[in-house]
Structure formats: structure tokens, C-alpha cells
Length: 193
Image 1: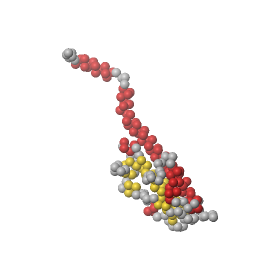
Image 2: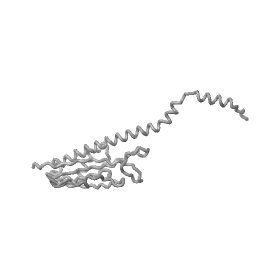
Image 3: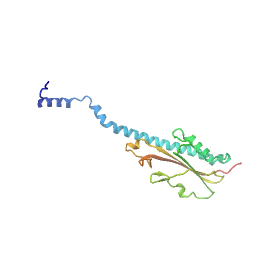
Image 4: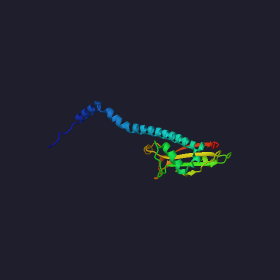
């Protein structure tokens, strides 16, 4: 069966009718804007989550460092594993940490009374986008100066969509993690016992 030939007038009338019809225009406009809107929304949410996680890490570090400050760790002869477990228990609400997790690094260094903390111990543990920090633990004695640093390699999701707050490279060589850091420096109280 043969279709009737369409005249130019008919085509013009259909195009005019299509142009005047406003139904569905909001849906089409939203379809153009929605991807950008959702990327921005998720970027804001991820940034807020990173700041919140950094605050929890800071609080957990300070609470655990108090065990060293008040000689509780010394009196109980607390080991590195026990101290790391204490830190982990204080931050596990948001952080995935444990004995087999390599994202958490705890560094506890002690210095004799009156010794200045070397700048190398305060330097950034990131070199070329790679985390170079190593766990360390020295149980302080009364009167020692102590530096406690806790690092966590926080995985990012929205970074893959073009928004980048990462400062660490992932295994594929792309930015996919943010190093969160918390520190506490103090002089251990004199032992009362």
C-alpha cells in the first residue's frame, strides 16, 4: 500500500503544533539539568562526610592519646596492637578498621623531656600521591613528650565523576582517596604511683 505524499504545508503545520505544545517541556528541561544537579548534590554530601569523618578521627585520636597522657597505657603496659584497637573502637562508627585493614595507620613517638619534636616527624606522609607513613609505637614514660598521629585512607566515590578532593592515588594511578590525619602532642603527666 502506498503512503500519500506529504505536502510541505502539512509538515509546517505539524512543526508549528509541536512547537506550541508545552506538555512535557519541564521533564525535558529536568533531564538536561538532572545529571549536573545530582553530581553536585553527591559532591556536597561526600565533602560533608569527609569533614565529619575527619572530626571523628580527631576526637578518637585525642581520646586514645589521653590514655598515654594520664599514664594509663604505661601502667597497663599497653602494646601497639592494644592502642590501635582502642583507636579503632573509638572511630568504628564511620571507619572500617581492624587487624586486617591497612587503611588505618597509628604513629606514637616519644621524646625525652625538653627535646624538640623534629620537623621530619611532623612532615606530610604523602610523596607523589602515595602514602608513605609507617606504623610506629613507643610507650612513653612519665615526663616524656609524645606525638600521636593517626592516618586513615578514606575512599572517595564522587571523585570519579570529576569532583576531586583526593590527595592520594589509588591502585589504578587515579585520585581516589583522601588521607585524613589527626594529631595530638603533649607531655605525659608525672606518674603518681
